[in-house]
View (cartoon, rainbow, N blue to C red):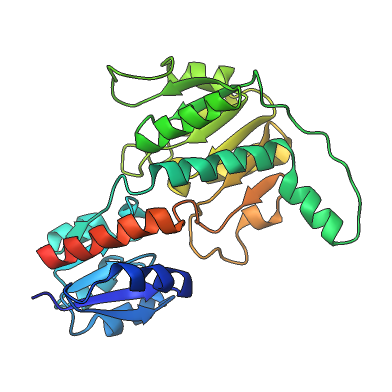
Length: 301
């Protein structure tokens, strides 16, 4: 029977976890996070399986986790938190959980579209501070949304967007026989889209996928929404183009370092909308994800 630790639960997670974990499930010791990177090996000691929400396992950390055999990552973006190549070399299996929250994440992405198009977060801050600035926004009906990555979340994003009157085009790295919207090249998408929504997994092929050259091909004033991973965008180029106004707004749920560092350049820009990597976080999606995590941990490496 695996000795299993949930290394970094939170009060919100714990509320749902207690509803999902059954008396006949494997025993899981729950530690409340966050856990500093240097403290991870000490927390993991004595366990061979770890359920991980957002703790960092770089190569040095993995080498110090001498009894660890299996990491069950809550979601699909393990590459942002775990050195997958090092884990493979060390014989540590990394399991991920796909498809648990396609609708949930797409709804969050669409919320970011509305927030960016109508400057909702900016005006909220101004009014709460005692000011008053009715900002002109973008009407979405008839505008073009370009979806980069037409997997489960991308398809849900297309469905929701069409419901509010957006024209939808998409790019996918592999050919699709059953695409629900017109497929175009990434360069054509960048040239035509008023809003670009990113739904790519992060790996060696997609790191920096939206680099400076592609970002510069975008329509002036384009809104970019990212509920994928920060690493799919060339952030220095992004920051430059946000400052110049070529990119009108960046709405993101994902960051290079989470929680954000105080010196993160995004915190110093006005034309951004930021949420705390919560796109997946609804009770409906969470219950599915935690159930699968328990089952994966029980199955062992």
